[in-house]
Length: 251
Image (tube, rainbow, N blue to C red; front, side, top):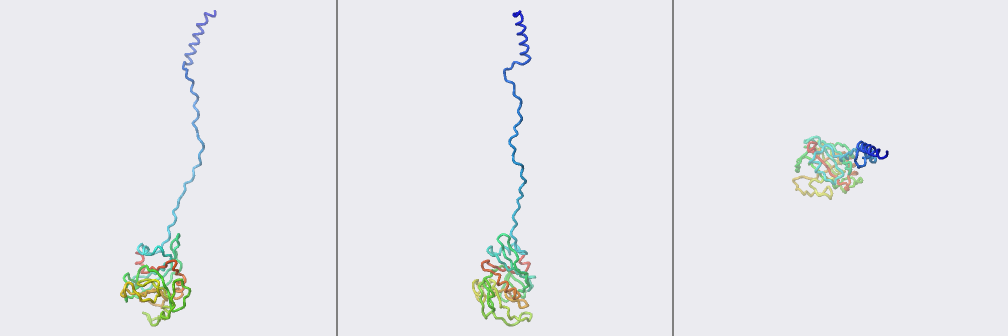
């Protein structure tokens, strides 16, 4: 019996082997889920970078005029004439902050300039004020020093008399003065007569007390404003004056 059943058992085994496959390789393990990795940081909002504001410039000055203002200057007296042939103007004192730029510090003040207005080629006797940018180095006057920071020369030679172009009295015009460094040597009294560019180019161009009319080439302010200016101008701030008619200053 047992011998006759062995072939049958063998046949059954072979059939089962065929049905189940005969590969000797191990069955592939089930696919594992894709690694998700560690969770990263949440998305950050975009950083908005704002440019720092540019330092403010003195308004109504063109590129050429601005370029003439020394980089070391931190005070500027800006005299803007009403027109090229006008003897009336406006004065504003500006100060420069290293970060914020130029800011008005005093004014606007009414002023007078040369009888016939402005020129970029001043000569003696033309009755015009010279346009341009000039340093302010020295002061003086007939009256005692009010506390000026610029070197101040009190001298009786600053006494003035006579009449102006409109018949107004000139007395007291030089009670306070600030020399404009046009055709003069900085560092000396405003009374100094040396003219480095020659006598024909004129000189003695000052800021001085207003007498109610046009000047021969200077810029004049009311006495209280001149005193205020003398107390404000500081040689440490390298003060300058920027002067001319509005159209010229916009260049």
